[in-house]
Length: 385
Ligand code: FAD
Ligand code: NA
Image (cartoon, rainbow, N blue to C red; front, top):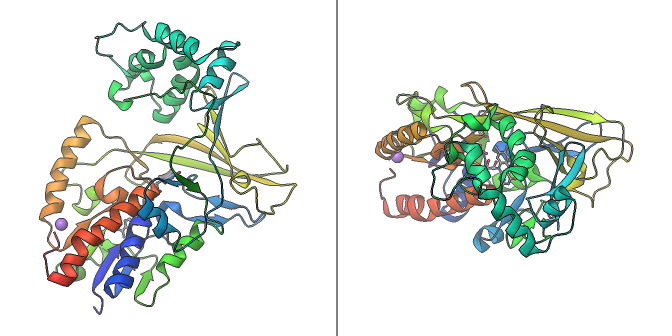
């Protein structure tokens, strides 16, 4: 095969590796993509009836404090001034998230100073005696934010995310539940934030647009692996356990189901993301994509919404968030050792390392894989392991 590098997967990790190797190192890169489009989970498309850009695999918000990543991303796209905010509906009322002074004043129905709010939450959290190990997720959450806020904003939402009562979930799923004692409800606090001016797919396509890069869609690496591994260096960004035929068992993932609908109104909910904290509402949140781009001209009599449902993934489902139980972590250690020993194959990205990575983290990690592994391999003949 007349290529210097095969990249499995065309998400942000794979495309960053491909673009850097093609542009910086002059490598001829073949990108294999199982799906019928590039971009991995960051892929977006225009809903045909309205032209509204929708995120097929869940809403993607770009934010980073990494200057190198910001500079790199800006080579392929400009960004809007979008700032993300999230609200939640509980028992017919709307509250700002993440839990902040505004949420607390609204929920308890009166004005609190930051000190008063802090004292109130500390008193409510004292229900779980300090020094006692929380037995389950519920106790852990109550020990962090007290029972009233837990029951309103965490219990139902978490039960829906995991399809499990929080009293049956391990405490370790949450390490912190930040409460902001200010009225600031900006969701991210990174230095840079915005959405790609002409959409994610245009950005991703410009990364792949290089004479040394060939992208082959509808192509599963596992149909060709025997002809590739050992003959040409491979960067693999598919699921780690799948690469080794699940020899150490399956790594657990949570998946999402989405229901997209065109609704005959110019504005369904007045905001991009509305969470639903009530347990009897079956979905966890509703995305309304037009609000991601208030600067665009979209129809004023129709809008696109997407309801999101959450559950544990089976083997045929899209893996979205690592569950990371103690058993998963044991298996992961064994798979990592196998990956290290697999000569000529570099494992990367979200699926290849069993790690939740934001886009900016996937890009950062790909840039360092090129600098620390691929460049030494191509320029100094170092082994790729
Ligand atoms: P992916 O994007 O998953 O790409 C992997 C690619 O490999 C896929 O295209 C897959 O089809 C392909 N592949 C797998 N196996 C094979 C095979 N055998 N042969 C060929 N191809 C194969 N990040 C943010 O920064 N902000 C957000 O708001 C945000 N929201 C998210 C919401 C959801 C629901 C999810 C799941 C992720 C979100 N992310 C967000 C993370 C973002 O999607 C990831 O950072 C990004 O997808 C990582 O890219 P990747 O290349 O590692 O993996
Ligand atoms: Na390896």
